[in-house]
Length: 134
Image (cartoon, rainbow, N blue to C red; front, side, top):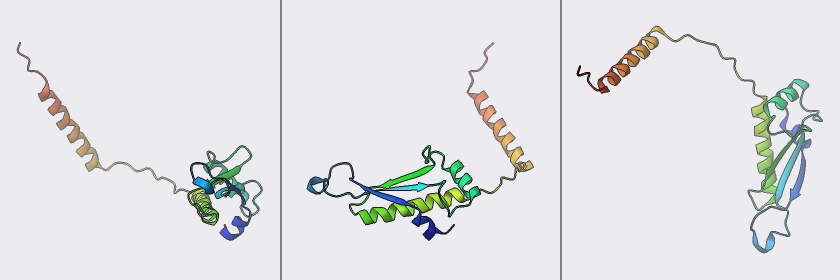
């Protein structure tokens, strides 16, 4: 995946940020919304698109659009940098294929330790019971 080419496929929209801000807030659109159309991407292979659509299922819209937004800074350019960085992190994490888990057996000593610990705990609980006075 070439990050420079994939950034060219992004669409940005500047919107007015919500919340308090004083006199300047109604004049400036500093919040940035990033749109990425997963299906229309020419930079990603089909198997990568499938992997991303599975892994990013909760972040994608019904049309397979990834929508991110940033209004952390008062600067539009800074917000754009932040949202691009966040997008690249999400994509690289989504494309990582996890290692296959190899099932292992517990060692004999760990089994022995666990059983001894269980016996000790059970004995402790027996000692807490009221004595039988019959």
